[in-house]
Image (cartoon, rainbow, N blue to C red):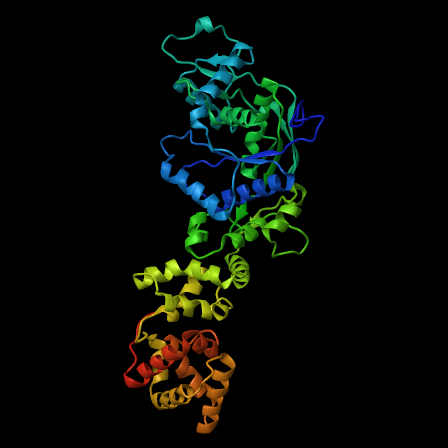
Length: 488
């Protein structure tokens, strides 16, 4: 019986945990990959070990430098640092080939001279018989002297045919695979290039990986990789295959469920701390805790708390978590995060006065926002030039008797010596009482005059943030001319 725990990493002293995240640069870093990287990173930080990054770039036709850089960028944005320089699997191909030839020399692998036509015939026969497509082992014990001269042979593993291979997984439990169901896999192609299965095993061994934490979709590979470990008599790492992430409809997460790239979520205005918190809760739990700071996650993280069932990606839940982190982020930090978005819309960086308004308004702005996109949109009034554009739906509020009321309010406010929220509120209410109208009759046109829209932070917060001069100037604009309407 081949067992995922024999032989294993064992030392007289405490084992140093070494993990790796090994994405393929054939696409950008998606949510599932980011969650895998996070679990590896947290497990390593919790254990005081080392976390490595390996780029599995053997598919040269689809691997690009742009996607490699995007993977780096995505991990850095998430705050997941790695130890040492990233490893390129492609550059290690000579080492992989060396191991395949060593297995050949030891009699644990053999040359296979099957032609493509023979392999296709095996596949068709298996399909006709309703069986899985497997190599029939015809060159396993055949005399190489019979080999055709025009075929470049592959190297295949001489896998055990009897017994079973047992995976004792830290998340999925014990999985038993009958060896009769596994064929003699190719290790080295006829052109001398190694296959993925061999490359992963050799790289994990050479990098001294002690724990392989990856998606459950890799579980079918593990039995085959165990056979390579045992053929080489190498220590076997511990395995933990974490559940997949499904969409809200219960189907495997795909493009139709929304953005998949981690960098897409950055552009959509999510905070890295919120993404870490949200991804942590996709398949891992600690009681009923929902908001878990990264430092606490490191202290708590354990593989036995990872569930077996697929996790469900819920954008509304992510919005809720992100809104929490926005509310608890320092105002000055949020200003720095929204300024590039505002500058892009403005066509240049807001001046120091506008930035001061933005900082003053931030306590009220961040209470309502779910993302940085929301925050930048609601903060636009702080940096917009005069006369401020008014949303079409809000323009009607500046008609009728609104200009007269706003002109009177402006006169009352101009006489107010203390430009703080409490005094601005008192002055506004005194004006309203004096006019004998309801507060909303004045407050709503006031909001539109100052922000261009019907929704904003508290109107007294808005006035305090804009300051005396800007507030009175915007009121003058609203009462002097018909409002300039715009979509936003």
